Length: 207
Image 1 (tube, rainbow, N blue to C red):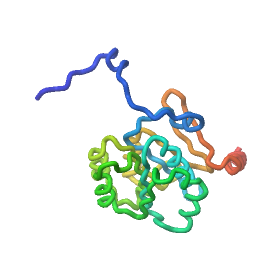
Image 2 (cartoon, helix red, strand yellow):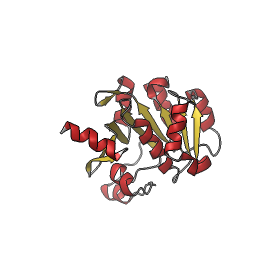
Image 3 (cartoon, rainbow, N blue to C red):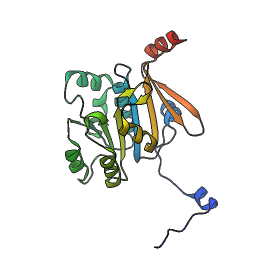
């Protein structure tokens, strides 16, 4: 068996990676991430999770086309209101709302030329993904960024599969009290207020 040549420390140091040039609050929260891999977002209902992800999606359209697979809610008035609230119409066809599209149908869509570079799966618990099919999805589309939304069990993602994906995810974002928390390498814990007034009220009541 032929093994790949190991790299020296100097060679690793000079390697170049494509990154998304985030600025402002997004830079503080997520640094300058690669435009591929997996991010996991989790939190309890009514804490601002959907609003956060949609706001993030709008920002990410500056770096590539975004497809949102709304397996949990699909086309409904609440989702329509949420999309209007974040001004998603401003980005036009850079954002695609897929409704409730099964994972096999999503794969067929992503196999097409010029398909979305960034894919949101909302939510893991409604997707029928297990660890094997998650790994197959990642392997089939190594150059795409998957953002997977999960329910929460306390302060952790809900379920065995979600917990396994958390270990694999490059970005791990927990939502609580209208605030998104992320662990940024070299910077410690960072947060982003989804609704600043509501976040301040929630966290002030806890202190």
